Image (cartoon, rainbow, N blue to C red; front, side):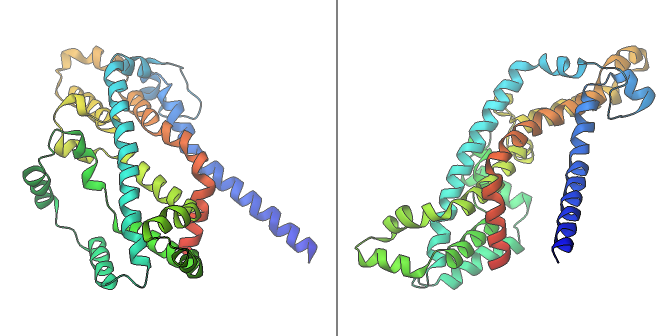
Length: 293
């Protein structure tokens, strides 16, 4: 039995190692392509080791360095504020829904679940946020539309119901603690895994979003990093499509393909750096939601 257990352990470890390598290969190719000259990409295609090393793509992007720095600032603000406010609102809704004493909680839960199945569509959503809330060309246009998520609320409610002992909440009430005191002093300290999990989900969603900027933002000062990089890529495609044949040499020298790879590197790198700090909470929160949900 011990030999079988060791063999299974070795097989599992080797399988996970191979899977991890397969997951890393696209990022290696991405970085390699961003450091390859445009001429080499045209002649030889993409490779894991640059045929001709070149930083032209990053030099091209650094020419718009002030715009990128400002866009990073916008994205960081949107990600932090959106995640904190959204997490707070989700917690304040999920906690009452997890308590059996909350009146009409089944009806409220049905309304939350309904939003996961049906959506009003882009045009009604646009009219609501622009005509009712007047958020067009404001920083809130990048925050408010994604502030609440029905899936996060259901996940958090399930965690509260299955992980926080009811006897603990009753003891707090017997000691004179109100609902807000119970939530702040007892529930939240025990809910670090689910808070970190949903916080990571939400922050990635905010960081990677470019669609809200395309819909609600026309002021360049409010472009997020994803929105700015997407527009840079569109500008490159426009130049390639519409410039005359007389500009062929200039087009060949423009590192268009490697710039696209560099754009992806710049956009994804901060999330890759931040993920290891949330990993242990993320895995624990997902396992609790999967097993007990």
